[in-house]
Length: 342
Image (cartoon, rainbow, N blue to C red; front, side, top):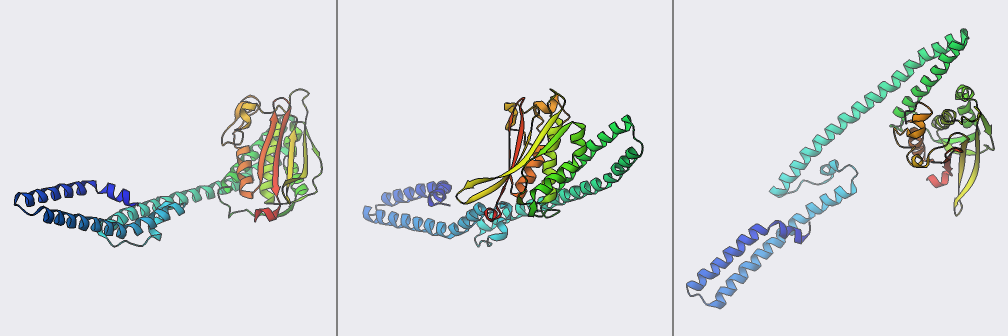
């Protein structure tokens, strides 16, 4: 709190004091007191009042300064009263107690919200694991009873499993301490693992993968990265070109120089599908955004690429895409060298 703000906050008592001082000077003049004595008395009163204001400001300033600095430095400002010493003046104590009561109420609400969020996340994860049993049973029944109709049902079970997987990773993405481990992995192995998981989807869409150079080592969580690549592959299958009924998705990696003695490994996944309209390119990673393609070509939840971005951010991986309508889409993942992460 600056001295100017302090004075502005006390304009009313200062104005009353000025009127009282003028009245005293008038009374002394009426009673015939010497003008020099009148001026001396008024000067002493003014100096005494100014000294009182200055001392009071100096007394209050440390508390407000500490509180202001604490609020500026904290991401969670409701914790300020936990780190500021209790003041000594009555007015500051009243202010401190009011702020502390509000902070405690906010802490209680945040704790309750976190508890509800944790319970919901645990429920979703439990539900996902439970739903895997009937999905596995449905797959077994389909395998033992081959027919065109059952094959169609099996394809729908694939779609259900994909949405269940999205729900699992969405719930896990809010909590880094669970099922999350950054380590050195073989990029080619993770790509092939994602292709195995999405093989039925790609075959059903008549999309053929073409693998380029993938002999690189990167740092990421293998499960999360496999899921990310799988979501991109699903999009390549969903939005394949309708020209000849077949599609291709090319996957390769290469090293990029990102600065002076600074390198990153870039994984590119390029399809020759319908592409993305220019007006939608900047929003495809937004939560719930389906875009023109999502409405025209496939049932879309708008969660696939959103999860791709969220999980990549948590792993420290840059993600972007380039697309031209009618030509295809290329999604790129950039893995910085481990030295650059630290």
